[in-house]
Length: 354
Image 1 (cartoon, one colour):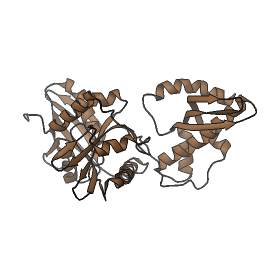
Image 2 (spheres, one colour):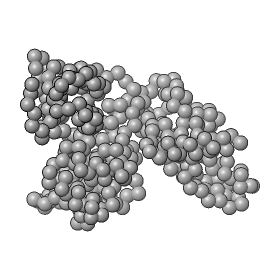
Image 3 (cartoon, one colour):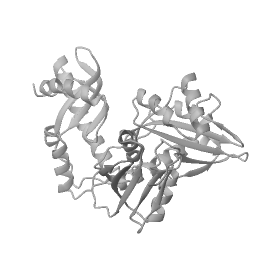
Image 4 (cartoon, helix red, strand yellow):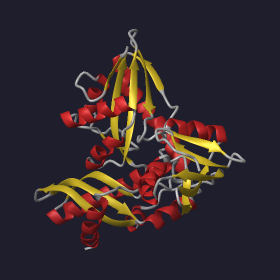
């Protein structure tokens, strides 16, 4: 009866969850169980899935770098389960197997982590639409069949153990749109494709392959793509090491995300900015673009006046580092009387400063 209660409410959860995952949900947990009756087999399988889901959630919140000093009992873990949804299932008279999503009670998990003195992630990473680039000599390939990096990623059932990533199918429409974006250095047109495929942000990763067989793999920042991982890279030799390189780069990206969003105090400087606009209606799109630059924390709209928006944000770093990060994202920071007062300006947009 306890599992039936969870599953009934899990139906509602499944509808809401389909839009976006969260840190306290374990997805696609494979389950199996046996019993003298179909009911017993199912209950055994679901219990096993809930316990496995707990381990997966804890690993995500810790970033795989910490271990609980004392693991809760199975009964305590089961009491932390909020609800479940069955993704798929099969059964015989004595066996049951399938996949479930398990959502845990947020406060219960947080209380456990605090009890163990563990810093935990407070923000789930977005779902990325991953665009792999292959650079060799003067040529650059994206979703073409000749892109060896793209073909390698296609063979992987799971692209990342930490991030949720969606690999484009490579149809003609996607190929043309992505190549046009690369030519224009602006991925605004690609955002609709990413959204239709269940992704929230675009992540571009390039492999530079030299004639000697050496290579370098790194995230690339364009307008309207994430630049959270700017400056990270891995290197290797030979095509057979590319998959290992991809895993190492994922570890670097996961570590950066975890360090940024773990529940520890972060010291930063508050900046106050003007943003020149022709009309206030532009703010909806500008806000999305600014929030995509997740190094700008606590972005807040302060007010507006004709032709200008006033806002503030927190940046954890020096003003010179802020200028560099904004430049990589297609923006400029123009200081006024002090470093923390200034104007934000889009580099690709002609503005007349009042």
